[in-house]
Length: 300
Image (cartoon, rainbow, N blue to C red; front, side, top):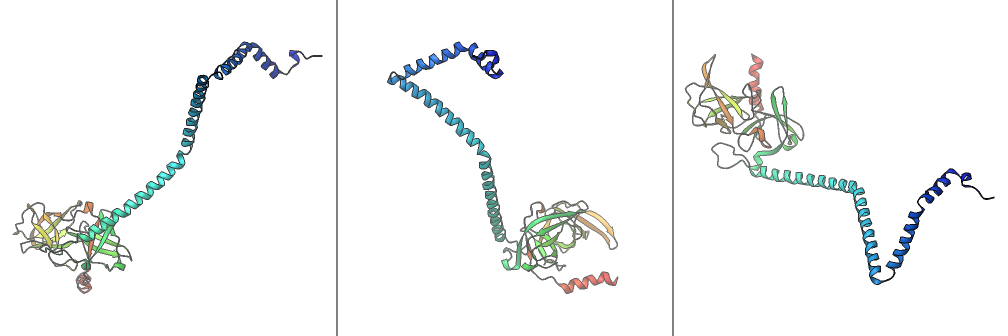
């Protein structure tokens, strides 16, 4: 006995109802496909149209697929590019540093203000500043040469333009430099062309290019721009090394136990803001002189 529509499963009933409702559309599509098959297979022109239509569809699909695969491969490509970029940056940094080192070795400073010839390469150690340390307002510089390179404490340090400071401590491959910007260091200086001297110290509010020459006799008459150099009254630096210039000819007078003295603002020759390379003078510091001078405080 044949099954009725009501006895079929519910999904089957829905499919049959759908086909019944839209049967005229299915018949229309079927007829269209048959008609197109006869038309396209009937002549060369028709076949060329069919080939063009299908090739364009297939080409567009291939292009979409290629773009999809390219997008999926973008992350891996990006990682490779980042790695290559990092390698190029590293190579550029090394090359730039080598060029800077070569330039620093080729621009040795002058030993004295009046010298026309620079220091010999054997008289100094060229070192690169690797860090600037600031603690409680005191400035220090770390350089990349140490005791293994012949550097000792109390050796003088210069830039290509003037005095920097002195070596304070050393390790095998690094050294700590205390600059004239630090209030803990005092440097005996003199005015070029005048038989007067004073003490170079950091100002109360230090900046990167200023210091104070204090203790100058009141009869001195320096002009703005006059050269200030080391006096030689120190075991750190020989006489006549460039320190800076007078920034203001108007003195600030102070009264001390020995009388009235004048203080002058000094513009340092070394640009500490852009300090990258220094030259450590390999002259052995006089331990005997230092020990003798330190005994003054011990005996007092």
